[in-house]
Amino acid sequence: ETISVIGLGYIGLPTAAAFASRQKKVIGVDINQRAVDIINRGGVHIVEPELEELVKKAVDEGFLEAVTAPRPADAFLIAVPTPFKDGHQPDLDYVEQAVNALAPVLKKGDLIILESTSPVGATEQMADWLAALRPDLCFPQQDAAAPDVNIAYCPERVLPGKVMVELIKNDRVIGGMTRECSARASELYNIFLLGECVVTNSRTAEMCKLTENSFRDVNIAFANELSLICDVQGINVWELIRLANRHPRVNILQPGPGVGGHCIAVDPWFIVSQHPSLARLIHTARVVNDAKPFWVVDKVKAAVADCLASTGLRAAEVKIACFGLAFKPNIDDLRESPAVHVAELIADWHAGETWVVEPNVPHLPPALENKVKLQSLEFALQQADVLVMLVDHAVFKLIPGQQIKQDWIVDTKGVWR
Ligand code: SAJ
Image 1 (tube, helix red, strand yellow):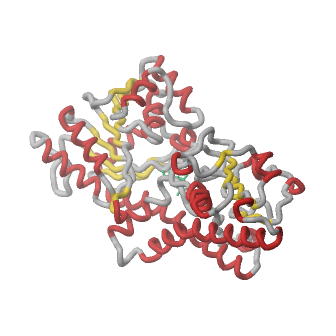
Image 2 (image 1 turned 90 degrees about the vertical axis):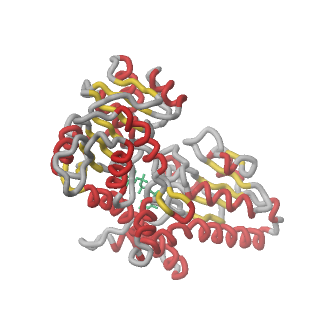
Image 3 (image 1 turned 120 degrees about the vertical axis):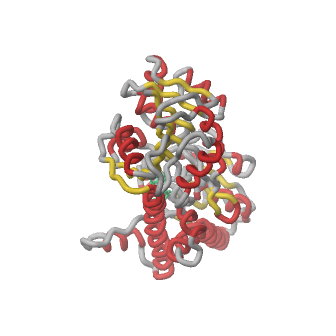
């Protein structure tokens, strides 16, 4: 049995490595020649704990090979990006490209699984595309008899930074287009899965993925809204949440500078774009979370104004130090990071220098080049006038209170108060 994983990114490569580690022959497919070359040398082009060792072993032992165009296999897993286009419409172009590429090598008895986060109906859409490309094969439909090719939607739900653990341990939602499709997909994942395969249909599985990330977004928006209210009321929002969470049925998440990453800030829009008038709460949560960076910048402006009034410094002399750029603590991933957004907004507005401290990243992202300076933790703590805490990295939490001498602090994570 040969398994082909199409899209060797944050999800596809770990999944390919998991199958290969169970001695299955895996063909990884990616249009990025550079990624393919790195993998075939036993390396990785993304940072994720444990991944490099697994990939190296799989390639050395001959279980994993990367190529740029699909080859025949028995099962195909599609794990390509599904971003959104202008107006927050889901963009299925990469899925369609993957389908176009694999259609010619498809044969009777094959299984196709879509893992990419997708709007409801995407799996049926994929079956329609395939049916048009391969009229000689029978694809699953609600009414049809046993199809030649089985199709299922099985979303990933792994947490970046813990992918290799969660990939194996988490339960997996299996949305087959028919019962047979679900049975085949469950059998495939059971090659490496310790968690359970929970079977449903493809539309429910698509909605389930969107629901999980929207749940988190709505709950973070609740915490972010509380932080605005508490600021006006002079209440410490972190203490408030700690106290409220002592209630047995209350479990509020943490406020911050906004919501980043490539999932939670994106997936709720897939629901909103399909149901603009029904998804009011989900839409509002997005608006609340996306507004948070601007609120943080207003707080920084107020702190700088206060600093100028108290010290008599000119604005151009005030040094602002931002702590953290990653989209969440203890990772190096800057994708859609609200901290990057905040640092950029500050630098664009501020007349003096803006500094950034980010121990997890060696270079500034393009958005910040020529706008801010990367500084060491010690230097920024000693020399900055205004401190802005954006990401609660463990190293920042360890800074002893007496080392923080500044009077002007904007702390979006409640670390320094
Ligand atoms: N955040 C807060 N407050 C919190 C928790 C998170 O502001 O209390 C912020 C983070 O700082 C970050 C953003 O939310 O900017 C997202 O971080 P996250 O840790 O909630 O999620 P991701 O994006 O790393 O991964 C999520 C996970 N989904 C859920 O927990 C429901 C993961 O399981 C999914 O597989 C992943 O999205 C995905 O790929 O969809």
